[in-house]
Amino acid sequence: MSNVNPDWGKGLLPAVVQDYVTGEVLMLGYMNDASWEATLRDRRVTFYSRSRDEIWRKGETSGNFFDLVSWDIDCDKDTFLLQVMPQGPACHTGSVSCFGSVPFLSELADLIRARRDNPDGSYTSKLLSGDKTFVAQKVGEEGVELALASVAQSSERIVSEAADLIYHFLVLLEANDLSFPEVVAELRERRASSLTSS
Image (cartoon, rainbow, N blue to C red; front, side):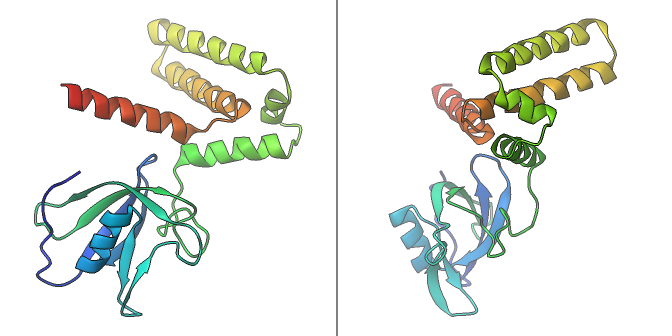
């Protein structure tokens, strides 16, 4: 978290909002000093609406709040970067991001969840409807196949086996009611710990 004071010379500063777990850019808003103070005080992102000429807290009507995790400011001290834990979609259209993109691994994880909730006879549905130990076994097999491919086979084979491992890893998480963002959050915590201890 930055300790640099923003330069309010022009009254409003842009704030780029980023998902703390996935790194996806969620939206761009504007802040004045009052909305910034409210954000820091309550740890919930609050903007200044240029069209309504008032302060508004993201999620105050939808419930899709942005919980502030960390922030930084650029070298000119006139643009914020806010890392948040979103409590729902960022966009009023229901999209995860106002920019419309969804990270592919998140999209794949959503598809796997849908196949669990609405079985359709697919390979994924069959994996999730069976014994969890079979899914665990598949992850083990794919890990070994990737390791062997990295030693004795082509780059194309390594990529193929890595894709198989990542897919089965996501299925294993879903089978255990866990999510990919939880794994990313753990990696971020480890990275933060290593930076503070070094």
